[in-house]
Amino acid sequence: DRRRDSPAAGSPIQPIIKDVGEVYSRLLDHRPVIQGEIRYFVKEFEEKRGLRELRVLENLKNTIFETNERVLPKCEQAMQDNLSETFKR
Image 1 (cartoon, helix red, strand yellow):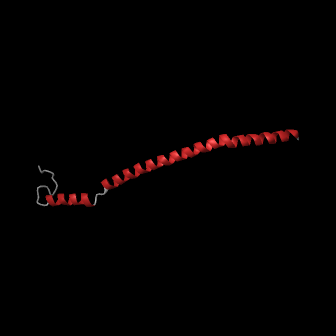
Image 2: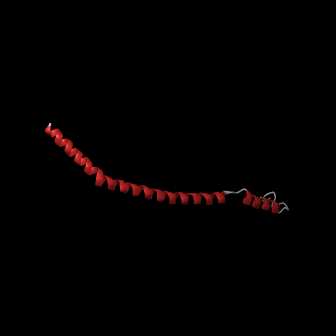
Image 3: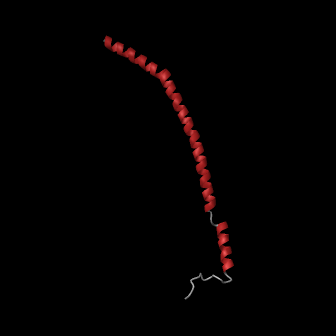
């Protein structure tokens, strides 16, 4: 019965393989950094988007108020004037 070990198990090359793995992890594995950047981007995007949507809603409220207070009465008056003129004809 042979034990199935890696070829380097128990050999003097094992510490070198471990060191190479650590070097790779520190220099070439950018996943933790990228994940941090993605989290930061999403957080910033959501905060700025929330503020932008708040401004859009505020502008919409102002537009509706102006329409109700100024535009609708003018339209109603113009319609009344034109209808009465039409009925006279």
